[in-house]
Image (tube, helix red, strand yellow):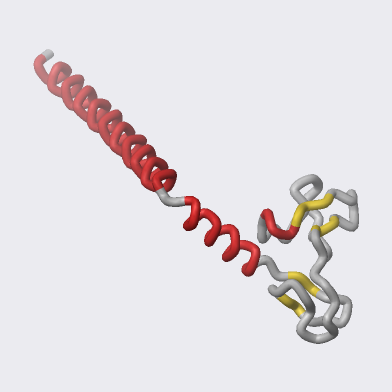
Length: 109
């Protein structure tokens, strides 16, 4: 019987350690969220600017751009991407998303 208590104690120790690891992971995530929310509005604005710069679009002339106007023909960038299948529209500045969030089809500028 003492062998069973030893095994039961080992299992309890493993379960306790697993719970402790889970608690540490949750605490780490909470700290990361807190640190991220402490950042100034300026850093949030910079992140939005960088995200907008990263969003590329294809012009009718065939050139891929990341600016407000096409470098090949001067056409303005589209203000949103439209799904050719279901016509769902996603604002260009919100995401670098290349596929429709509604049906999964590839988005077109």
